[in-house]
Amino acid sequence: MALRTPIIAGNWKLHMGPAAAGALAGYLRDALESGAGAGSGGELVVFPTALSIPSVVAALAGSAIAVGIQEVAAKPTGALTGANSAVMAREAGCTWMLTGHSERRQFFAETDEGVRDKVKAGLAAGLRVMVCIGETLDERKAGRVEEVTRRQLGVALQGVPASALAELAVAYEPVWAIGTGVTATPEQAEEAHASIRAYLRTLYPAEADALRLLYGGSVKADNAATLLGQPDIDGALVGGASLEVASFAAIVGAAGAA
Ligand code: 13P
Image 1 (cartoon, rainbow, N blue to C red):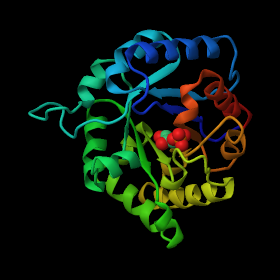
Image 2 (cartoon, rainbow, N blue to C red; image 1 turned 45 degrees about the horizontal axis):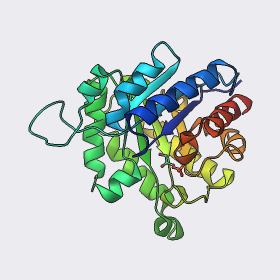
Image 3 (cartoon, rainbow, N blue to C red; image 1 turned 30 degrees about the vertical axis):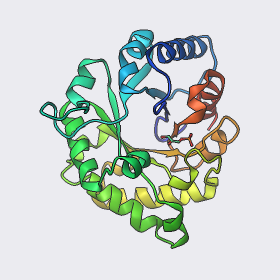
C-alpha cells in the first residue's frame, strides 16, 4: 500500500471558459463516478481559470473532486486591480490553490519571495496550497537542479510552521518538460523528488515523509503509471492531458495501479 495518498491534479491554465469548464467538470465527474479511473483511492483536484470557478464548483458539488484557484494575491483584499484573493477563492468554493507555477514566474515576474507570501495568504485563508518548483533546461544542463529546487522551496516555506505542513503539497515541474511532450524520465523525476524530500526532512523532520510530492510536465495516460510508481512521486499535476476526460481518467486510474 502506498505510503501517501496520491493526488492527481488538473491545471487547466487559461483554457475553458465558464461554460466549457463546467461541462468538462461534469463529464469528468460522470466518468469517475461510473468507474473510469476506479480504485485510485487518490485525491482529485482541478484548477480552472478564476472566471470558471463558479461553474466548476457547481458541477462538482457533492463529488469527491476538489476545486482550486491557479494563483492568488498575497493580500486578502485591497487596491490590487486585476488580482484574485485566497479568501474570496475559499468563499467561492475552492479548497486548494496553486502558487509558484513556472508560467507565473516566467510571464508574470513571480519571485521566490512573492510565492512565500502567497503560501502564507493561502494557509491563512484556509486553503490547501500546492507549491510549484522546478528548474529550466539551462539550469539542468549546468547541474543546478538541486540548488534551484531547494532555493525555491526553502524560500516558499519560510515561516511555515510544521503544524501547517499537512495543508501543503509540492509539485516538481521541470520547466523543460511543461507543454513540450518531453517528460522527465522516471529516474530523473525520482532523483529530483528524493532530493526534495531529503531537503524537506532537514526542515521538517517529523512531517516530511507525509508530504505529497507531485510530478508535473507532459504527464500523459501512457507515462503516468511508471512515473507514479516511483517511491517519492505521490501524484501528478497535469496540464494538457487534464483537458480531456479520457486521458485524465486514465491518469487517475494509473494512480491506483501505482
Ligand atoms: P503539461 O502537462 O501540459 O506539460 O503541463 C504541465 C503543467 O504545467 C501543470 O501545471
